[in-house]
Image (cartoon, rainbow, N blue to C red; front, side):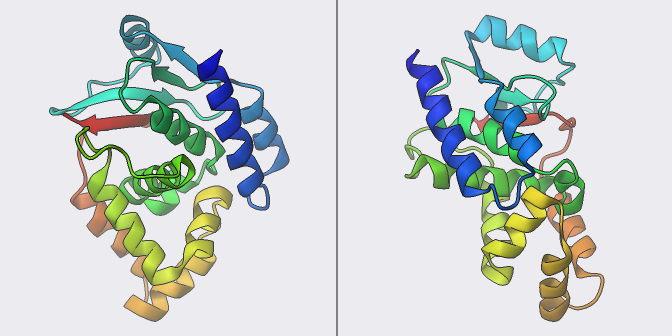
Length: 200
């Protein structure tokens, strides 16, 4: 019950905060599907059944979602369980075009940054960090173009404001180049599932 209440609290707050960008139907779908908190054995089985690939060496999948097709899954023994659940909820609220529009690195980085913002504090520095490079890249993108441009790309799939900003700052065809550069330095081998992966 405690985990369900925690999930409901953060989900309500996220939905309220981004309701001006997220379509009402997606908000309703997310609210209607509580996160499934599973022990490690059941989580790994769910992950395999969903077609999850082995995470890159040195990382461990602790959460995944398939958008709003089914509830997100979180390893209930994850030491950062609350943040991981928020991370998956943020993914579910994202526009289906956001991953392609932003590129893998920025997409995961924005997700992690928004999850930590909702959490309200930095994770314990003694625990493994999730997506540290990706988060730094997302924060740089926000620094350059502002929160509204990034949030519109992420939650509404609208990259026009971001594109104008980057063109003004970096030159024409910049968003695609910016994404290519960022993705070239990100981890390889991830599939299209929303993974909360932490370095161990």
